[in-house]
Image 1 (tube, rainbow, N blue to C red):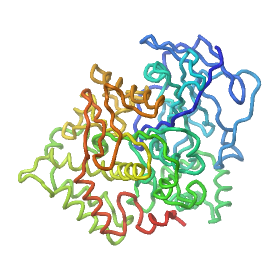
Image 2 (tube, rainbow, N blue to C red; image 1 turned 45 degrees about the vertical axis):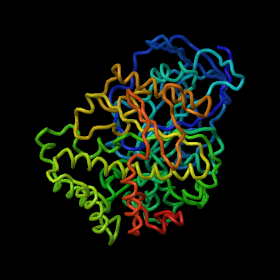
Image 3 (cartoon, helix red, strand yellow; image 1 turned 45 degrees about the horizontal axis):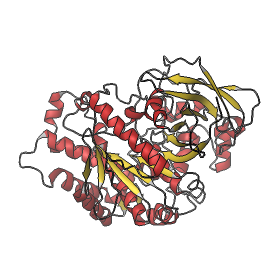
Image 4 (cartoon, helix red, strand yellow; image 1 turned 120 degrees about the horizontal axis):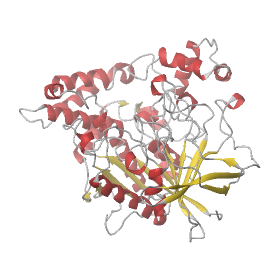
Length: 535
């Protein structure tokens, strides 16, 4: 293969927390047609993949991007890989990184702490542009708990991206204790002084660094609790790290899985995520970082009903769904949203405010189960993603970022049928359109889905090459603070203005009333000062 020039232009998102994967890691694809390339660290040999639609790509799987984080390098910052002189075979995926709970292990996905290897899917022909092809770097999701890129595969990336002159790089990274949330990670990488100048554009799908799941993890405190539960008597950070280095990942997971829970409503909660500090965040708040970061073209987006699949009702018997009422919804809010252990003495007032709006505000006199299920999904969507994604999007526009915002509304009929009362696209609905990862077993790509897939892929390609995703077909408008025009993505493209404005006004009023901000999982002073939760 002739050497190709690659120009890294864009950092790609996709998905925030809570994805569920299915299927086998093995694939039926032929790897016998070799292709070679020279990297900064040494030669590699991959294979040419011929997709069923006639497109093809050069595929390199398992290319090292860091030294294996094992031995003395466990729980340390990654270091560049050692160089090699013999050709490295890069035809199989390497291991996924280890989650911190057994429940997040997929029996079909091999795991190891030695997991820092990228996968590259590139067009087979050299670029005519001297600067090379645009590169999409895909950062997977998983809520900073788990996740992998093996499921993303390479077949659909060939059909969707390589066919449009784009290189795709899928990148695993240490999660949980070993330090996943894709869009939130991209957001933070666009802001941190360490990383914000390493790429030209960004796409953030369903997530922001200021979302509660990303910005409210007491990482230091829970690490101390885990070490103590494993028998470490010290509270000194260096001694705790040395102790944990002496434990196998199985030893750690036995304790983290059996003595702790992933629910913040309980004292034995365990979870990790980005920590506001004086290094990666330079001691600054999200707002300060957005203000000072160099503006860059950005596509941001949300599913139209992010929380539809997370409220515990999808797939329930029709009798259960038909009986869902205000009392059920109220009980769920009381048990789940802003519990006292997190929100403190304000917890009941916070819950009452939410109940008054989402259960009783503008409720029909004879509200049906469909009304309450829909309202529950909207509440979860707002708390989980919507409000902070929209908040940060507005801030970036205010400080001069050229932003394009989309709302994805399409979900295949078999998936929608599992909870027809929550009509709309749920979190991760778009993943199967661009990668091989089947998030929900019922999902299919029929004629309408393929039309949406084409729209989405064209948006990526146009944006990667020009910084503007607008085409004659999609008429994608630039987002502004007056109209907040957004591209509504379904089989018939349209433009939405000022989406969920009333709910945005409610949340603005809500957070102004309380010291604890439920949207961010932090108190007012913690937000203003950008301080860690666990000093």
